[in-house]
Image 1 (spheres, rainbow, N blue to C red):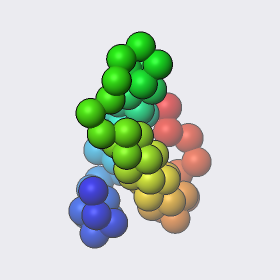
Image 2 (image 1 turned 30 degrees about the vertical axis):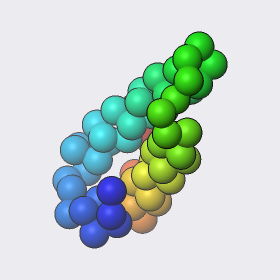
Image 3 (image 1 turned 180 degrees about the horizontal axis):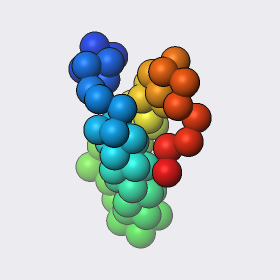
Image 4 (image 1 turned 90 degrees about the vertical axis):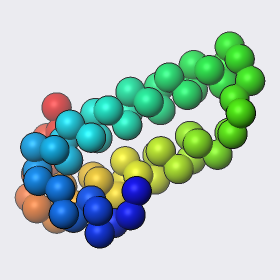
Length: 66
């Protein structure tokens, strides 16, 4: 996800997306332990997306996601 797309999102949408991607990272990590991931870089990309979203929320003055 690009930073411009993240900045265009409303705050509520962004909070929801952060939670969704965090759940996705959890599922990917579970797959990495139990199965073989097709693309191990998915975890890295998802974590970076979370960081980008959290940065935008922080810039907006929002500290609490959940």
